[in-house]
Image 1 (cartoon, rainbow, N blue to C red):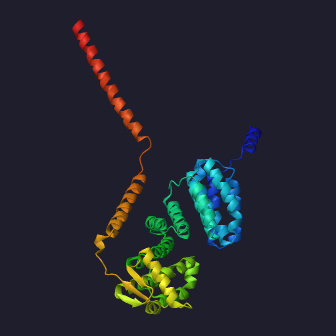
Image 2: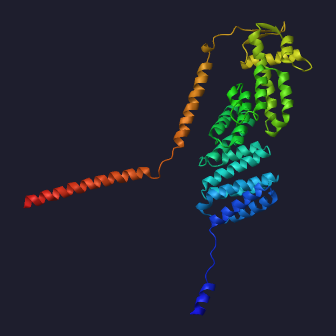
Image 3: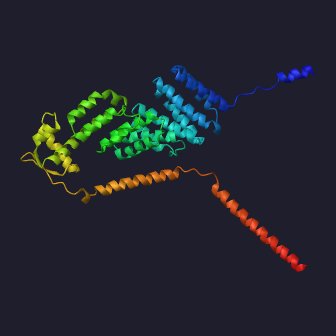
Length: 392
């Protein structure tokens, strides 16, 4: 008996850890290595975890896998090798789509968009976004990231209205703890609003914890609001390193035309008639022929409807027309329409975000059927009892 017991102990099968536990351990080690700034070791660990993850097809691993994908991309980004994993991320996204891993699809789509935008490949990012499955927003954090990347793509493509919507929505939906993300969203939203000809409110720059980060953009907004081209150039040079780090320097170059247009609008309101030489002097144009440049700028502004004036080419004058009643134009209607559209979109998003218990309509139907069945049984029992009384 002693020999048999020893044999049974030695022949007991080894217990393998659960796949979920194994992936969770990979995740903890990876986070620890990144916190300790051991980026090369983290890159090796993340590659091994992804190779192990490819062999698993369990829905219980999906949430852990989505976190692992994020740190996998982060470890390669911190070592400057983000382009190496683009093909691997595309393969993982394809596998997640085939396995109906919706959270993994959203996470990998955002990581791919970040990968493309990191190298300024905006066309490829837009092609991927348009061909990818519809973003269902199962995770609020991933949806915020998606809106931010979409806003950046739309901004580069000159679709400023859609970009503004996406960036403001991302900033509004972002968690309160994600201060850095909300600051970045507000920076891009400020630039987009300036490109649209809007002046952001002062409260945007005075949000708690954002005052110092948004200070360069506040001074830039003041320069655009005044229409001072010289001040705009000095601020752009002063904070060029900040704008370059935020990847908004190319957008700020586009703002030069808006600054000139704002200054021209202020001039047209202040003067009923002014010579083009004085316009060039007030706008501080530094070209070889400032009068000719001022004439072309005024002509374009009149054609676009930015100012209500006429151009006297023979005398070299700009003659402003009298300012009319704004309520006789379509501007109030456009403003109300934008507010109504905003409220309707918010209502639709709130309805889509509602959570209902699964099969709630089926449970209601079964309860009604049960009630009908009980009522029929009671009527049948009553009818049988009445027949028995009649026979008696």
